[in-house]
Image 1 (tube, rainbow, N blue to C red):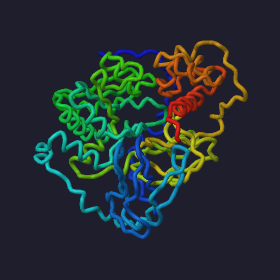
Image 2: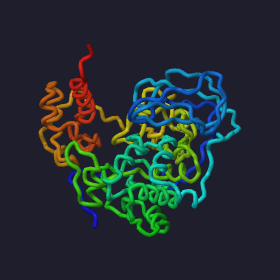
Image 3: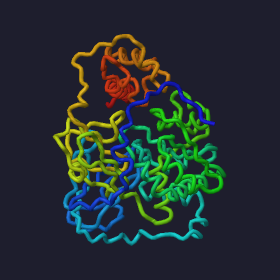
Image 4: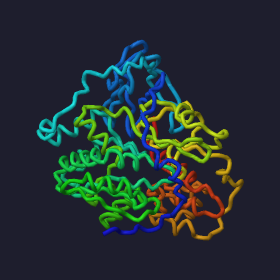
Length: 438
């Protein structure tokens, strides 16, 4: 039984641009830029220096604590280890590799037989996933091994998120159509780690081909849950409620209600790490938008620049806005030399007709944002608290529970930049809570 979560919106999907475009292998670029920060937690420390030769799949960065390693996505020579622009708007220490186009594979990349995989313990599987550098590939980039190890003994329901509710993006749709067996195998590994006999794949009903492929590939204990399309169905807490009817408490994690959610691309990456011995060095990226001549789904080496991806699709005019991600939750880019990282599932390129900026907007007190908020928050009061700089009022209105889905801003007739305000407000709260350095 599917449950309908509170609020949400139905934005124009615009998936027709790329949904029927088969995934193409993107030609490896001459230069890749591998940031040392592609995950939530401590950034990696480089393990290579300028002039070093590296092989495809070689570990080139690692650190202690909440961290996962990063690997070379091509073979070649390290051209530089320097600060480069990042998709989050900052600059990050990065390893720049000059591709030799030989695709020399690292000697540590070794496939495993089914018998070898069956013999692995949950702890060994978690270690493999950690060493492969796998993170949440839907955009959250939380280290997957931490979510897995922290859920052992607590999680009774594992869910693969194939919802992909964001407009324009079709990367997971194509993945589920073209490689459903890898998604299923990845879920089986997750189920083994948690000690479960049943697992769920949540997907919206606007992806009939992917649904059919997943159902055909599903084995005993794998349930494909078809959900009515509504944004933000793919948000973790909303997906949990839609499938199980359980509500994650304010400030809580999914494990608090016995659930763990993994993006479809993350699940495939788990399969490739365990069976093929391949670390996370490439991913499917949807390159789409209203001014592109040929939108595409591309299998892209980590470290490929946005410029290269956009040029591969062609464009009819200069972009008004380029987003890492989709139009609802994506991050606008100021420099198109930024590299594709593990959490980038789309590059959305929009023209001037998407200009919706209003100078000095004023709230109309219509309440539409309240009806749309899937977290049952009060966006109008949250925004007012941010404008007034009232940290206590921000906390009182649970602004940290905002998932930044953009449903409120989408429905706002006054075009108030609500999500922008909430992102800034969260940082204000974090800064106010940070210990004072002596």
